[in-house]
Length: 609
Image 1 (cartoon, one colour):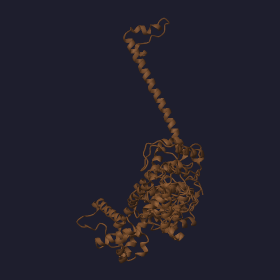
Image 2 (cartoon, one colour):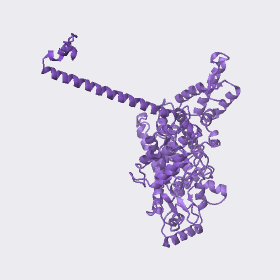
Image 3 (cartoon, one colour):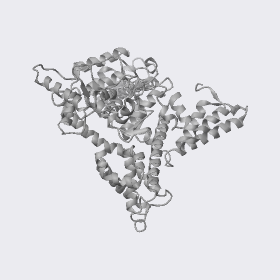
Image 4 (cartoon, one colour):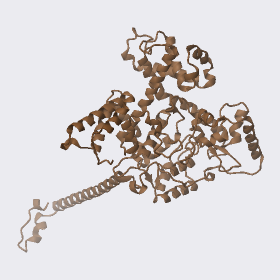
């Protein structure tokens, strides 16, 4: 059905809406609204109002859902979503009605959650498929209300609808948090309906929740209080960042206690702030929102180690496998043990030269191997993609879906990163590659496509990952790899030593090589995030930008007219001034005598002026 089709209440529609009642309270409320809307349509019968346009129903439902979201905090929550996603949304390709499609919406949501929370959401992340792949949302089907998922996958979306989808996904993550906290209570036999009896019980529940969240295998293997207490001293060996994470949660508790100080009587509730299930649920919602950014500190530490391995002689974002393994073999580091096969699965192995395999720094850093907390299969914590902040700067500066190569060169040359200083002069190679992209798109470079992402990797090789072609293998975590292939994701010592020996032989050779951006492999395979044809949304960003262009022209003509008006007024004032000065030094009759011989009307001084 199209947007102009009519929507009538039918048993199938009511069944579809009712089937979503198994989801969260938000979903149940949305479905009740849908049922009410369907009932109103049914009651109207065959009257004029008996047929309601699909677009009208959708807009009304969006309005109603907006009023329900935000945990009772009016529209402020949705407005925050809209404000955060506005820069990306404004530059995404849109159809003739000014809306984005399914692929562009997935792209925007994936970037939002990864950059703001470090969340990798299955069903939003590409994971080897195109952004507009129809089967990509299978993970969401059992979690998101049917109507909202249908709106996501089959209909163009505006910024408000995109904010609703973002709020729905966030609610699902928070719902998982509550269920995991409930599991922690049940493991220790604590009743959810009663407050915890002591500070020790409070700390036990919090640390158990963190254990279940960060190390999900512990949910099955550590199912008693005794087993959990015995494991706590060893937790830092299973996860080196355990002690720092526990300390961070303690600091977060103090911050929340201060924020909510006006709601509690310190004389009656001293030490009782986080004893109830509801208060701990609020705390854990804050934990899940912020722990990704806290863990990203560790990601930055990993990047620094990778930069040390890369050395000053390379600027291409690559590390030879021999150097990659050498610190582990020398017992200087416990990181960097992934096998070549597993690196290839992550998209982090550069095998363009089979005789000299190397690791792609940002692809490894942002890869699934560095993700934590794959507890529900729905979301996990991954390193924040630093390229997203660079892209957001470009989106704000360009403010359209595509741009001329010269405009991008001028803007990108002013962008800096952890490893790139600005301003800089972009190389001839980078300029040529932008021109090659523009040749495929009538002189413009689309910002949200594989080729520009590849160009950003060449321009910022240590921050922007090399994009993988669709159809590539789905990136796996360490555990997923072991389960799927029945072997370890870690290279054997023999394999590591072989690559180290080869690297030493290469280092001792007298031949010198250049390792910079110009030497990186480049392919011309394009994949845009949208199904909307480039000719339809246009290089200037569709109808919205064409309207803005027209308004600029109108404003220019108005400015020109205003300038001429000012000039005319100035000339007239100057003439008046000259006349007054001349009249002051001559008899009045000298100015009007030239009319007298012809018997014409004599002008008075006041009329002349």
